[in-house]
Structures are given as C-alpha cells and as structure tokens.
Length: 435
Image (cartoon, rainbow, N blue to C red):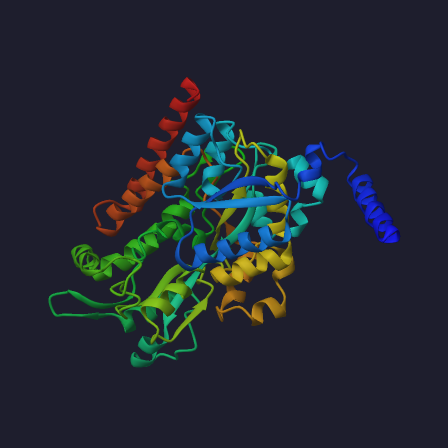
C-alpha cells in the first residue's frame, strides 16, 4: 500500500512539474476550461453541414479550444455592426469582395505575423487566390472554398440538335453556330429554347470581357476600367447574339424563368442548352435536374487561350477579437490539406491549395469535371473582379448597364461609358471626404 501511495504521489508531482504550476494556477485548469472562440459563417444546407462537420472535428481534437459556430444571415452588415459596437466574434467566414472595405475601415487583424510564425506562405495556394486577398501590403485573410467560371452544356439537347454531345464549342464562332442550331422559336419570334443566352444566369455579365482579354480594373491602383475597349468588344459580342433573338423576346423569356435555385431555372428545365457558370452549378443540376446529362469545358476565347473569372470564400479575424491567437489556431488547422480537402469535397468545390491538384483528390471528387476548374484557376487567363471599396456599387451599375444592352436600348460603348463616369465620380467623392 505504501508503494502504491508513493507512485500516486510521484505521478501527481510529475504532472504538476510538467504544467509548471500549482493547483491555484489557472493554467492548470486549461483542459477543463477550454478557451471558447465564436465563429460566424453564412453557409446553409449541405455547405453548412460541411463546415459544421469540420468544426466538430476541430473541437474533438483540440481540448484547449472550443469553437462555437453560429450561422448568420446578412453577414456583411452584421459583421461591420459588431465590430463598430465592440462585440465582434473571434473568427469569420467572409466573401473575398468584402476585404477591401473591411481593411480600409481598419476592421481586420492583419494575418502577416501569424502566417510567418506558422510558415503559411503564398506558395501553398493557387496564385490568383492569394493575390486577391493580399491588399495594401498585408495578408488580410486566407482562402477557403474557391470557384472558377466555365461553360456548361446539356448533352441531351446537343444530341437532339444533331450535335456531338461530347464536343463543346471550341471557338466563339462555333459557339454562335451551335447556339443557332440549338435555338427554337415560334413564328412570332417567341423563344421556346435558346442555345446560348448571354443574360442567363443574371450574374454572368462580368464574364464576357474576359473572353476578349478585358478586365474591370486594377486592385492595386484602385483604377476602374469599365469602358476598356476589350470590355466593349465582349459586350458587343453578346449584343449581336441578342439582336438575333430580339430584345423583347429575351425579356419575355426571362419573365417565364423561375428562380435560379429551382426546377424552373431554364438550364435545369432544358430551355437553355449552353450557359456560363461556376463550380457550384454541378451541385444544383444534380438536385433540380438529375436526368440531365451535362458537361463542362473552358469557355471559348478570342485568342484561343484558357480564361476564367474566379472568386472565393475566405476566413478572417475581425478587429476586436478577444482570442485572436486561438482564432488563428483554428484557421491554421483548417488550412492543412486533409482538412481543407475534406471541406471542399463536402461542399463539392475545388481546393485553393496547390497540393490538392493531384489524382487522388480529383478522383474522389463528386464533380467529374472538377479538374477543368482547377486548371482554369491555375491558368494565366485567370482573373477576378477588382478588389475595390466600390465593389457593390460597381457590380450593381454593371448589371443595370448589361440589362440595357441586352434589351438593345443602349450600345455597349454608351452603357459602359456611363458606368465609368459614375464610378469615377463616386470614387473621387469618397477620396475628397475620406468616407
């Protein structure tokens, strides 16, 4: 019994020395009282369940930290209000386009030192995603689930039209020819089925200038280039397609379309044969139109080289976080390939990590065309909408201008000149009053 008592005492002493504390030291209780960090994210449905799974996995393997996840609606507004009010969460999933405004408002904790300490460098990521999240000389966030843009085609409709269902259009001229073969109209011009309709989906307007080597601006200088000649050329190409269909006919067709995420979406309902869309579209097709046979390929471009427009979700630490060190420990863990890949597989997206561009990740991915998106994101033609504080206004004005172009009410040059003038005035106003 004495021997057993001595062993018990020895073990107690050893544990005490290992933790370097007395029983009154708070650090001795670290396992029984983990540091709780609050994490806000905006994903729902299967995407929300995916991140919830990763959070649970982190909590199970990190007894000293507990991540409390909350799903928030209207996240951009709530994030800014929480920071202004001095009650932000510790870590947040955000959209990449929010970063310029948040950084300018001093609402973010720069991640440079944390990245340096943990050896997280730009070499780990697909270059375009690291680039779009590094502004004003700092790393403000790290990418999580990215997207790139390509063309989808309905193989069933290709076969009905006498086209090879395994061969998408390779050139812009071929895309126009395919579209004419796939379009069905009544004698009065009413569109029953469209081969390719540039105004669907409604957010595709920013993509077409990329096919002509255009760009919308420069993140580093803050320059807006709405009326760049290549942008005008891209929208001229789309307007020529609209002229063949008729502006009023297109408007009527849109009025008959359902919501984007629903079975009446014209691509899911087999009323549009070719569309431009992001990596997420495969998930919606399987949900709303499981009988469609579909394919994905790089969109044809004027110069024949691959081009795409990318975006990504990212993760940030807001200014005022009570536990930034523990928050970054969660971020660092999420950046590890096994965890990032698990999140991206569950959300059915590709990974922002260069390491993930390998056969075993690609083969187990539920999207059979995921390699197309990875290659596009890694191509020299990968671009993104400029990271500007005026992002929301810019996109809103471009959408309105493109609607005018597709209704044949304005030429692309007129519409884009107006956008350019309005954005320059707004940016000058912001600089003058330092808003």
